[in-house]
Length: 151
Image (cartoon, rainbow, N blue to C red):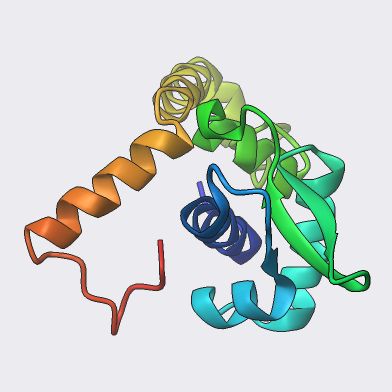
C-alpha cells in the first residue's frame, strides 16, 4: 500500500489545526498552517477545502476577510482510516492493484485478509491518540523538529 503525499499533508494540517485551535474560537490562517507544516500553500488550500467539505475542518472569517480554519466537531475522534478515505477519495487500500491479474486471482483471499487487518489497525488510531503520542515523543526527546514537521 502506498498512500498519496496528500494524505501525509492532510494529517499534518489537521494535527497543526488541532494544536493551534483546539478549544479556541479563533482559527489558524492558511498561510500559518502552510508555514507550520511545510505544506505548499496551493496544496494546503486544496486540502483544507476538501477537509472542510468532509467536516474535518471548518472555515471561519477573521477580521472580516481572512479565512481561518478550525477543527470540525468531533474530529479528534476520527481515525486515520477516516482521513485516508477523505483524502484518497476511496476506501480500497489495494486500489493500486489490477484485480483482474493472476496475482489477485491466486492470492485474492490473502489480500482481503491483509486489507481487513490494515483497515482495522487504521481504524484504531484516532487523531487524539496521534497528538498524545507526539507529546510523549517530545518529552522523551525523540521528536526532531528539524526533520519532522509539526505533527
